[in-house]
Image (tube, rainbow, N blue to C red):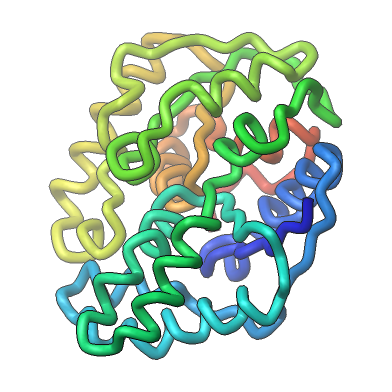
Length: 247
């Protein structure tokens, strides 16, 4: 399988180790991975802020980049950005040809955990991890892409990892992209409610499929002096090391 990796802005600028771990996982699953260094933002911030027209140029770049790659699938270590690309067709109501190209891309765009489980049938993890881990269901993955047990299925492949369910696994982390900027007090309150659930579970790590959620949770964990770390599932599966303090 020939995969084009779309790393997302936050991975590129803040946690590149997640991108490296995604590549390692895909190769471990038997995929050939390509990466376009000319990648740009997917346009999600503009759409979330109410300016979808500003995302059109970015969407065209993503579409063109994928077509140029010749890959079978576009895979992202992010449910939110994958969902944005899946909805590209809505940006091109007045451009039928671009709408057709956007729909073609949407059919080949997949979040990393889904792709590893349903397309690759991954049966082992290249790394190991010793400790207890809670899974956070990111809103876009859960509610937009319909992800449910994919992440948990993959974590069960990791030697030494103890998966613990928390009572607020499906609750929002409070980030919400521009929501955290516009409503910081409410965003923090939502995150802290999630942290209470994590604390009750007594885990070492909280993980998930979106760097944005994990970045938000890690910032709050550090703020309250918690020893719990927020780490992307790809890093747990590959045994990757990274800084555990927020950027």
